[in-house]
Image (cartoon, rainbow, N blue to C red; front, side, top):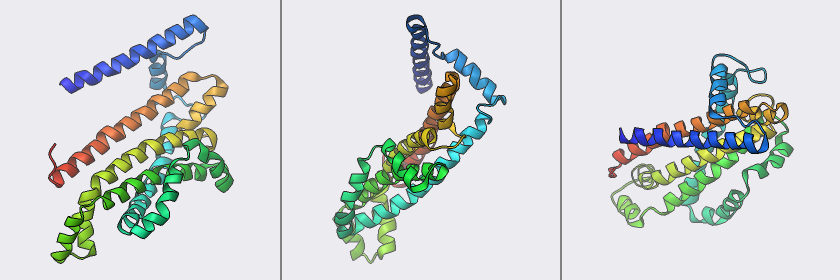
Length: 258
């Protein structure tokens, strides 16, 4: 009950600040800034079937989710595998980790010209940007988790007859699992943000990012705020309903205290 009250209070504070910004923007600059009421009203109409730029809000949302889910899943698989090899083999770590760290320093939007040169306009460029922004933190955290595994644990398991598969399952994976989850969480936010930016620049007519950029030209800022609400809501759902539950399950499985 206490957590619910705090969450509702935080939401009310956000809406109050939003309303005040909209009110004073109108009063001072005479600019129509969408307020919470007009935005929620527009969202309700969209949920009931009113289209935004020739497509329903559901089509825009599921298109964005589909792009993100595919590229993010590829980033998770590739990131964990590469992180494992870089963590287990010191020579590979020395050779390739400087390159990984260098890529990490490239801002998300800086990948736009590279994506355009490689793949042109369209979904492939968007998928590439999501993948590259997602895979890097997973590689780094996965390899760090493997490398930080206690040598005593590895030696003890090997002495007891554990082969490579058993060593990975019973020693390396439990030791690094929370590093991997942290990397997946970072990758989630990074890849989700760059998805929206990519759809604004290299997307083609469909997606939540496309709504935002198109509203700039049509002056339909309410639609852009609707898109932002959906973007934030999806991010919060992924964090609260997915990653928190995954982390809780792993803590129970591996015997960590709550």
